[in-house]
Amino acid sequence: MHKIIAANWKMYKDRTQAATTAGELAAVLPEILPAGREVIVFPPFTAIESVARVFDGKKGLAVGGQNFYPAPEGAFTGEISIDMLRDVGAQWVLAGHSERRHVFGESDELVARKAVFALSHGLKTMLCIGEKLEEREQGSLYAVLERQLTAFFEARPDGMAGETLPGRLAIAYEPVWAIGTGKVAGPGEVREAHGVTRALLERFVGDSGKKLPILYGGSVKPDNAGALIALDNVDGLLVGGASLEAQSFLQIIGA
Image 1 (cartoon, helix red, strand yellow):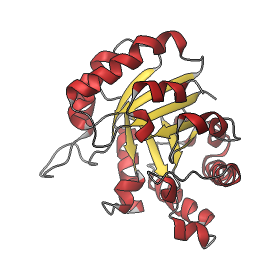
Image 2: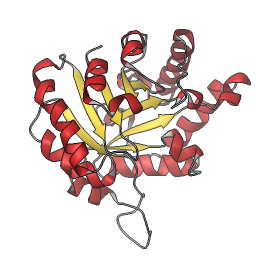
Image 3: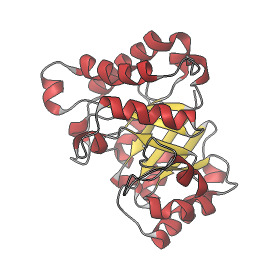
């Protein structure tokens, strides 16, 4: 399975800054990107087009949107649509990032509806799942991941069979307690969570579940990226703060 290294720039970088960083990545990645690795950058909405222009035609580089509303258009003040994202060059979207779930209150049902909507309308989707610290300490890891994934798989329309998902859907496991805190889940904790996720995917879609990439996201840095991506069932990394500087992100990509 190919590896995906994704950058979530969150609410950082204006258009000029985003284009500069994207340019630093695009200047070297097509030559050094290991075979079977894909790099996705999720800039703020205002910078998607700037990054897409820089990445255009560069093998292995893609751009995505951090959020969207599951409707073609309408009176949804402050929201953005799939068609708007596609219009400025997005190929991917995030759904259910922990900050959307726990800061903005998005329910499992809404996240599932968004992920299904994006896939149904032609954008590749990275579905984020993960537990809070108290859930981990209570031994609820399996229950939380099962609940979040069940919401998505039960929301799929009949025409979205499991065999149609590889190449279009990725899962990002984010231990909420390790995002932006400097804490990183230990190797055993990551193996456990990714093993649970893999087993659930296979339960829902059979052999197709073996082909869906599972990324780890949670205080990924250049000095821990290699160890993380070497673990079983870790098919990539979702990187926050360490992706804001090109050199730091390049080190992670090459780990």
